[in-house]
Length: 120
Ligand SMILES: [Zn+2]
Figure 1 (cartoon, rainbow, N blue to C red):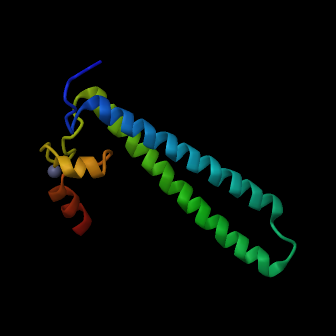
Figure 2 (cartoon, rainbow, N blue to C red; figure 1 turned 90 degrees about the vertical axis):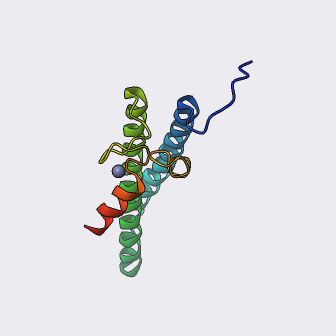
């Protein structure tokens, strides 16, 4: 057994966590795809129901978009792990706060740059 103490920024642990998130996202997307397919099939003959179903599938598509973005961020984080730039802010190059990384493992920017980007 490996008795090495786990560091908060252990690349191996981060990789596992990112992969788990990826699987989770894939599963959620598969469910959404299924629901979207289902709705389009069943697009009701009833007029008022149609409106509701269209609105629902728009929400589904928006959710699917969001998950696709999250998947892209995770892929990018995995690539940064390979490159050895994981945990460094993409804007200023400073190390990202460990607690921030622990909460958001795929985050690209440090707090300062993220705040700056939000304001502009
Ligand atoms: Zn920064």
